[in-house]
Image (cartoon, rainbow, N blue to C red; front, side, top):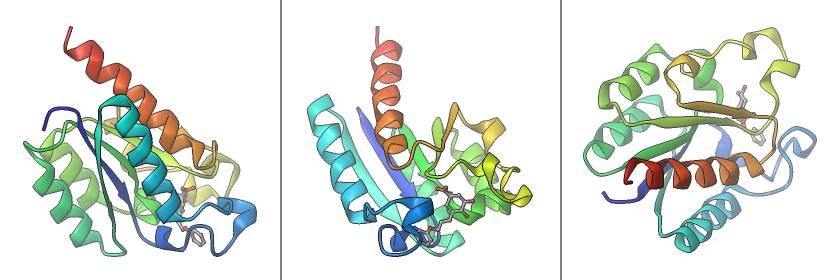
Amino acid sequence: MDRTVLLINGPNLNLLGTREPHIYGSTTLSDVESNTKSQGEGLGITVQSFQSNHEGAIIDRIHEARGNVEYIIINPGGLTHTSVALRDALAGVAIPFIEVHISNVHAREEFRHKSFLSDKAVAVICGLGVFGYSAALQFVDQQLKASKT
Ligand code: CA2
C-alpha cells in the first residue's frame, strides 16, 4: 500500500489520442498510463492503472483499492456528471482522490459544469490537457511526503 496510487480513467477515455484531438489532444491512454507510471518510478510511487467503460467495473475496482492504495487519481469521463454511485464508492472507501479532466469542462456545455464528485475530491484539475495527470501525481507525492513527516 505504501506509496501506491491508482489511476482510473472512465468511459470512452480508451479513445484518447484517436478522436477529437482538438478537445483531448493526441496523446493516447496507453501513453498517459506509461508516462504516469514512469513519473511514479522517479518519485518512488507505484502507479496502478485501470480504465473501463462500465460504471460497475470502476466501482468494483475502487472497492478493491481499499487498504491497498493510498491515493486515487481519477478522470471519471462522462460519469462525472451523472453518477451518484461513483460518488458513493469514492466516499465509501475514503481514499483521498484527485479529479482530473483533460478539457476545461467549465468552458464547455452547461451539463459538464456539474460534477457529482468535486466536493468529495481533495482537488480538481481541468483544462491542462494530459499534463493534468502529471500535475496530480506531483501533488500526490507532496501530500504523501507531508503525511509521513
Ligand atoms: O475533459 C475530460 O477529461 C472529460 O472528463 C472527458 C469526458 C467528458 O465527458 C467530460 O465532460 C470531460 C469524455 C471522455 C471521452 O474521451 C474521448 C477521448 C477521445 C475521443 C473521444 C472521447
